Amino acid sequence: MIKFENHLGVIDISHDYLVNLVGNTAASCFGVAAMSNATPRQSLMERLFGSDSLDKGIRIRVKNQKLVIDLHIIVTYGTNISAIVKSIMHKVRFTVEDCTGFVVSRVNVFIDGMKTL
Image (cartoon, rainbow, N blue to C red; front, side, top):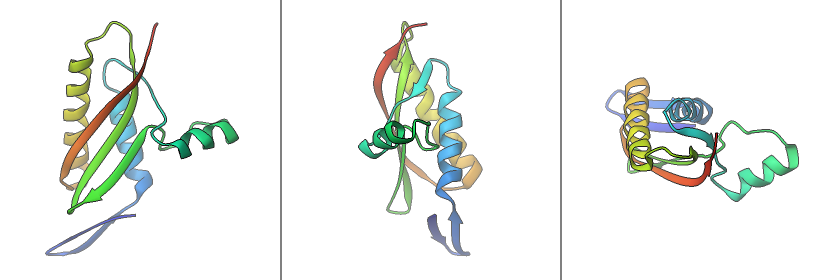
């Protein structure tokens, strides 16, 4: 659960909802071929159970009542990486702030690989 406190009370949003929201938003951006494992734990879980986990390539933290989102992606070969990263950063920030009302402090995008078509 991710908790935020405001003048009206406490807001709780499940981690799974945020991960699903961020993952779907990032995957829908042009040039994103796949999500990459963000942590060694995710790599281990994928090797042990062989399935893609819900939070693959996504790490969400709360810092000073603001969200910090880390995305690890694999891009399509031949696309403009800086344009892809800017697009992902803006789209993820807008979507999360629009759907949840939480302020997003930073969206960090890490390019972990490149895939050819």
